[in-house]
Amino acid sequence: MTRDDEHNMAATDDDTEAVEQVVEEVRDEIRHGQVDDDVSNVLEERFDEAGVRLRPEAIDDLAEDIENDVSM
Image (cartoon, rainbow, N blue to C red):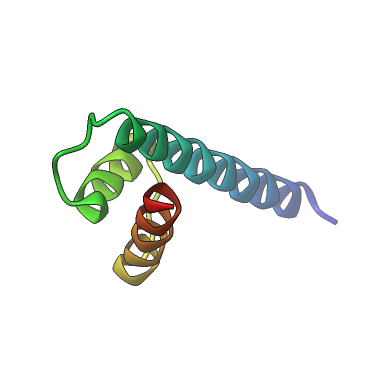
């Protein structure tokens, strides 16, 4: 494995960690009634702030998972 491969893997791990952190924060805020906007929009804004780029479909899927989890 080259240094570039290691760096790319680390960036991927960082992105994964950032996505998980954003999802947990949004999930917690929804549970506390702090999110009034569309969950997909909130996630998109938070990912932009974190420097993470995801496909719109992936953001929608995450939003749906969060909404389903919180509604249980």
